[in-house]
Image (cartoon, rainbow, N blue to C red; front, side):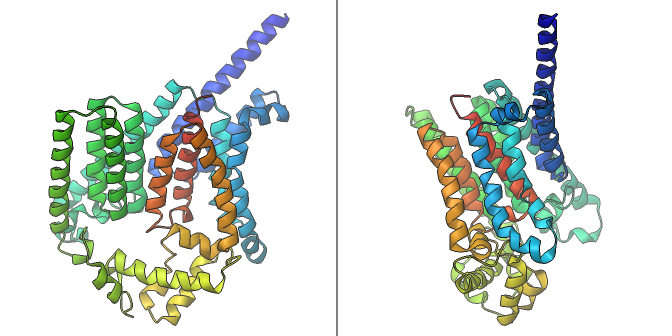
Length: 420
């Protein structure tokens, strides 16, 4: 009788384990489509099911999460301290909800059994979802280019995000292209050579069509680093020819995409000196391009940090304070558009000050130390991706950015831990 009961409990626990893994796959598939509510619902359901499978034993559930998983939730609590001012003054936890994946995703991922085979399923599901999304967007853009109304603009605008991104899924171009960069990183880990080349080619074309310039740089860094890493295992004339051909193809691609836009501000290559001088003008607008706008925004962001260097202004107030800076500099387009800092470090310096950034640095230091000790080099590639994108975008100011970062941040540490 006892053995029968034990068998039934194990079978029940095994079914829940499989279902929780299915939720993890579903989450990986939903992220590229920016289905916001699942970022809260799926991990919450997964954690509840774990609690149920442990016969409502909270101690057993805690053991499943592991120490490193709980350490990752510190990122949520550090943000929470600097959100207290907003919650107290506005009587709203709306901004706090954007940070919930930093709490829920580590608990979900670290309490789920992820073998190498299971990791392959998660990674491949994400990669093919991103490629499918890019292909659907391309078909929508082609349709609108040939058959839609005039609102799609001049023919040369076909490749820009109004047709390719907003035309179907309405995802911010930087985030949309960032999916491709993360999928490329995973492709180097999970695919054989031929399939890897095909998928990376498709992803790179998608990133080029989206034309979020910083993500194209990231893509080249990811491809270049992994190629060099692969070639270091042995040099051959064939590999040399392959690198040379890819360099020539990259050069020609840059030249082509730099000339395809009639609007000068959409070109991949810009004159930085001219852009810097233009950024001081009071009449700057979207027509001047992202580089000019960001230069003006960054000046105001630095000024705001200088006024509140230690504790910052508190999370949630960034845009309001920046609007006042834009008004002081008499740049109407900036304050009418309520632009944020468009740089993740500046965003943190404004909201959390030097003290908050130091606290975050200490938490990340734990993960970096673990990555070094356990030789999790893919983790550093992942961090590099977000560090580069964070130069021109406050990527963690949106729920999608937090969800994307938190999911793969936990997955990279979990999967590449040789003890798991």
